[in-house]
Image 1 (tube, rainbow, N blue to C red):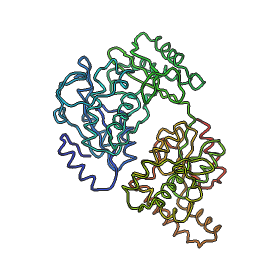
Image 2: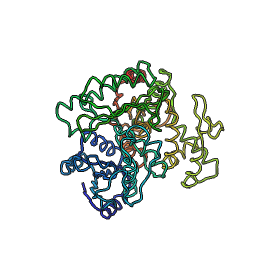
Image 3: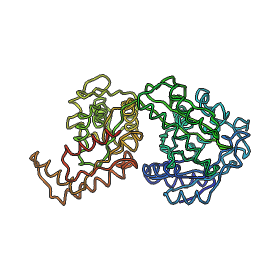
Image 4: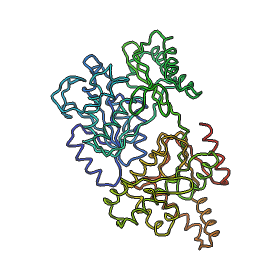
Length: 507
């Protein structure tokens, strides 16, 4: 792991890294690292060739009366954690190196250009109590994005308002960066991990767990059918008020994207809390979704994903989102638009304005029905070249996520659970040994009356494809950290379907 404190050194080394094909994942932190930060770094490590972490206690996000000077710092231990996980670069700049006064603070004029967050995103949750805080966060995160230019940046769901704001300004300012929200990591008691937990005594840690337990009670109430705001908020407040040591700052139910208050939950709601225990301010939240669970099935070629996924969808009454048909539709559109399949800018222009409609019966693109047309040999011969283009993938991932917004979707691929739907409730990595997949391929070829290679030849071919799929720059084959691995050696299709249906129904 390389450690840099200057922008010049960081940029020099990044230029060397980018001479090697691969993506860059970025995890910004303020140090005092814990298992929650480690989960972000592991996720970044799984999904990228290069991982950069930063440690910077940002003066611009602390109010004049807040704990900037007391904020926990443990640089040596933090370095050890990063190196153990496999972080490639650790960036530890001073305030002066980033061009801000060391004594600057939130809401105070620093005679520097700042990123100003829209007022609507600061009017709820932590915004009123921390004026200037989110402008300070947005300013420094924007600086780091500009310096590092990562492909993806990873943030914890515990800081849900910060995550929503960063997603908002990254889109508004056209940063070509995927903002990845990652689940909250908790103590066995339920207490959300936070660097500020270091301020708590052992007794206060026990008391603090009430925050999470109150949210879990409301979450259970929601699952039982209560979607109105007031009863959910009352449940949280009544649970906390039993602990006189806890001073509630707010309990709110808001839209997790717009951060505006909700009277009831029709799709998604963020139930969030801030409170003080002694002098320590803690925050926590849970996401409440009305959607049916999403099932994401990944796995190597020849594992039977397509056959199994279709049957799972039919058994559960879910929508089978045929991602392969979407890539074929784009390929058909390119071929019928007179554009060369190697003309990536023209294809990017085309795919950015097209609309694909999928139903179980047909495929349409720009309101033209092309169900049979996308299965021709000509489309089949060109679809891999089109699918390998970053602009195509980005546009289709956006459309796939829109299909999944209301849930009740099952789909398969190579990185569905790691990238397309990282928040899918059910993730499966469907696989089989290379030997088993080779034997299945022999049977398929025999049934089709085609020449049958030897088992050793097929084993070598499939193993080579696995290696290529796992190391490709776009959509590499990965098992999500929270996916259930299902090894199908010795299992019939019906047995695999039954296993996946059972996993879904557990949700």
